[in-house]
Length: 170
Image 1 (cartoon, rainbow, N blue to C red):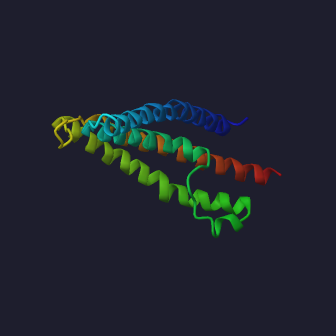
Image 2: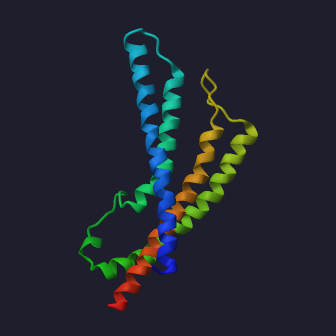
């Protein structure tokens, strides 16, 4: 196993671990939504905070799981032309598009997301509703999620390099 393949394995293991932890966020999200439905429909006591908290849990899940989804091939692609290409040509297309469409934008979003989160922390930003739920913790997840997405994109990029190297070795 080459050093490149070991690096890929380490990156993917880390991202799989994140995915296994984050997938459990569906449980509290479901419980919270069931609680809201029961209290609203049966006891006629709706809560504003449950929608806000549910949205934050869903955002946390969505943002942090996106990197695991990428390495598992679960993101949606427009495969009209891509699927007709040979594996080697697909690898070349990916080596061109990953930096432009994923790696560079992810780094930019890490930087900008950090500024956004730092501003939210400095202002102790909260929701505008009466419940005043803090927003700064969830905004902190934005740069973390894009850092993980960058790592996933890097792993996929390295996989294409290995694929092309192995194709040349045959």
